[in-house]
Length: 107
Length: 121
Image (cartoon, rainbow over all chains, first blue to last red; front, side):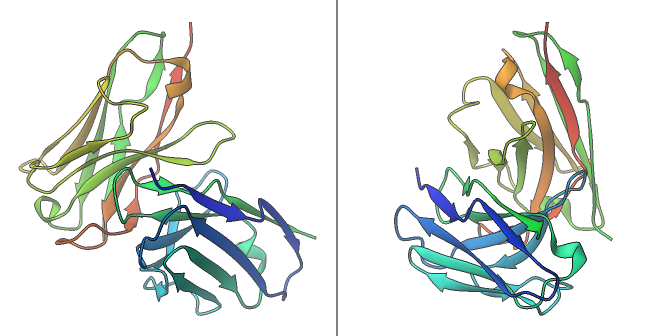
């Protein structure tokens, strides 16, 4: 199985900050990576697919990059609604696997 | 508007069974692979199972293989998850998800609100 390792596990930041979350795959997965935002009590929301493609309706302050084994999700200017948990996912091969999550807290 | 509505969750004893359903609307259900994903209390997201559009291909997480069965009814635009031999560790919110692309494995662009499964004696 492909292991997806996110870092950091927790991130504290302020409104207006730029933050970056990293996801490393245990083997090469080309660009078959997605990023999701999960707020408590809500369903996960797709932000980025194919490593760098922004899902329709997602604000442009979100961006994804990477290929092979290392991927990043960046948020350029944090807004209050961005404080949530973020997950990477690989869909290159089955079983589909998610990272353990990165919780983004308000500093 | 795409909508996914799960049902069938509830309280079940260890060793028991439960059948989850997901009613879909707003897209051509029969064209898309569908999935179940779960989140246990205080834990991360865990993929459970995938069924291809025609039901030709089915995949399971090792943690549920042999106990859970994913299926679909394309005429009724409904996805199912039959869960048997339930364990305490199966307790979670179960989400029904749709894949973005109709022709290739893809990310999950729509998620239902989830249905809660509690496994306890």
